[in-house]
Image (cartoon, rainbow, N blue to C red; front, side, top):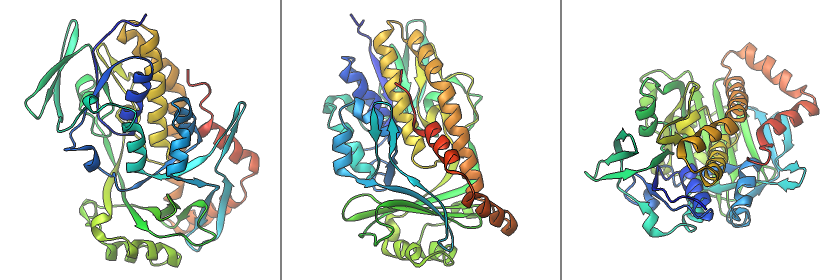
Length: 389
């Protein structure tokens, strides 16, 4: 029998919501506290997200894979091109496991969040609750919120992303590193023409990257990343003119997608990453997702790893009566896989943002000569999450 303990999730992003659903399905009641005024006003809600096979494996365990597939758009191919649309790499987006296969789904972020939210009760969600500080004592932890409300818990789960307040409490010496990259994201009402329609396409230039994918029958999602950003450029406004100028040497569809997107619907942010943490938990709390292992996002693995974390953490909290023991087992189960995926993601991110013309030429030649077995090995590293124990 599970001992009833009062826990809280700080942060209602994809990882936090997945954790709440996984815990609820195991009979563990937990509330979510988030800074947003309501769940529809969540940051980046009106953008897209890639749900790769490892994330779909988690959703299948939660009984939600079908709902996500129906609400999104299945991706058949992952295609990398140079900025002149020459193919550098092309691979199947689905992945076959020993017990079946899982697709890659592209979906609007707000639709994915709604599917997860619908599994929870309104009473579990506390909006306008920005966590400002945490105080620990021998038998619990107290969270202090901007609303001047304070709540006592047995444990907290930090799913509060890059700028995690929970991480700052447990590991105040850890500082987020802002990279020299900025990312713009947008969703536009359009039906991508062939051959773009059934693939996630990334185009690599010199210090520039642009990706796009259909996320429903009517909408497409795009993202643009620029490296070698100066301090002044980090404050650049995300108007369409700036982006069109940046990507004018890319295929016409790139500038067409940017031009079709209202400037107010383009979201920009600098990209941060977190040096590896020796621990992901304290006595009365644990971290998941970007709060624990933020890295440069690639192929949806940021959200996917957060969902994997959420499933495993819920499983450990259901198995072990003491939260601290559950947290220890959670980190033991997750650390090696997360470090492997983060390293691969960082390598991919670095290679895609070469700025030297010679380096880009050599990169492109290398990419076109990579044997198929190497690509399959990389897919196994990314997508094979085992039994999520």
